[in-house]
Length: 117
Image (cartoon, rainbow, N blue to C red; front, side):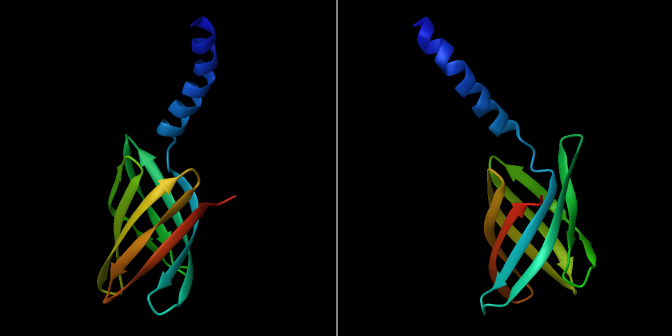
């Protein structure tokens, strides 16, 4: 029994670190429309007093503030206002990758991101 516990301690430590890892940081994003257009964006997630926030940098260099940022388990959702339209992103974070969908402005598509190096 002692050997089993000794073997489990490092594993449980890794699980605990993974569960408490913050999504805060810079992410390289590729958003694709339903028509196959691809856009490269930069997402910066911040965490302050246990609340998430951040910005999205558009291909033309403009910066948009994230709204209603929520992280429930591994599900990350947020909204942005851009060009008079509200866009919603629903995604999942796994390790250092984000995958999901977006919709707004009469369009929709997919989103994929990796932590910036």
